Amino acid sequence: MEPTDLIWMNGVFVPWEDAKVHVLTHGLHYGTGVFEGVRCYDTELGPAVFRNAEHVERLIKSAKLYYMDVPFSAEELRAATLELVARNGLSSCYIRPIVYRGYGTMGLNPLDATVDVTIACWEWGVYLGEEGASRGVRAKVSSWRRISPDSLIPHAKASGQYLNSVLAKVDSVKSGYDEAILLDDHGHVCEGTGENVYIVRDGEIATPGQHSSILDGITRRSVMQIASDLGYRVVERNIARAEMYLADEVFLSGTAAEIVPVREVDDHMIGTGEPGEITRVLQKEFDDAIHGRSERYREWLDPVRAPALQTPTGEPVGEHALAGGDGAGANGASGAVAAAERITGATG
Image (cartoon, rainbow, N blue to C red; front, side, top):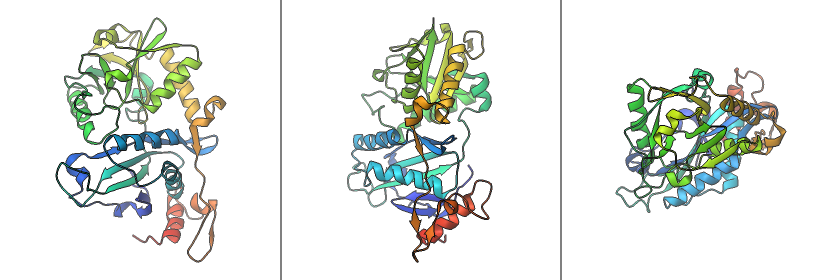
């Protein structure tokens, strides 16, 4: 992970190295936190966050499911995300907002613990690698089942719940695969460790529905809309494990991974063993959408604008300064942090 200059913590921009929490933070001990994975892309509109408002909305809803009232409005979090990217001088990056129970109490009743909010961003390539995106990945069905809705809340993107994915991911990697696919508590196909799953048979795209303990992925919604707009039939239904082996194509989608073909599942070659035609079409259309080349999906992009700010002395700080300015590094970060420090007084 390559550090950036600033992280947003409870309304304040803090230098990366100073963004710390107490070791007795409640969320560290009990997993009482919810988070999002968001991406900013270098688009034809300039840097733009993909479906920023939808990610913020899901973050707040996840927090409510775990009895956490977020102390910032959706619009404040959206604006903070855009400003953070601008201050760090990034044209493209991964963004990680997290809401968590903070320091001040211990024990399994979290209601007296503070609710803290942090947003960080950094440069991060596609999650399963460029080769995985181009050639496809090898997956195995995990012996670990996806968490049951009788035990936890699959619809919430909660920190502690991802121990489920960690177990499956480590097991798949140690077994020589790139990714794991988890079944739900009824034995139906559910999702990858960090992605939604789709199969293609006879031109129809099928994906598990929300009744199968999936996370309702925002990239999933985008893929389903693009596929429908292109005229493909998309259905949500239960998928049996063996259907993946018999499918013409299998692919995954997620914010970190984007769209990734699956060339093998449990050593069964999928189709020809190469990424399928429909997967390739969706990859291209999605890539056009996230980079602003598709007018149809421009509404999904939230452009990063350098904020109109002033220093404590009233000196204006223009877009040039926040975008990097004179003396900035390759990504403009040094100029951005200099501007940010003049505004906030942050000196590290």
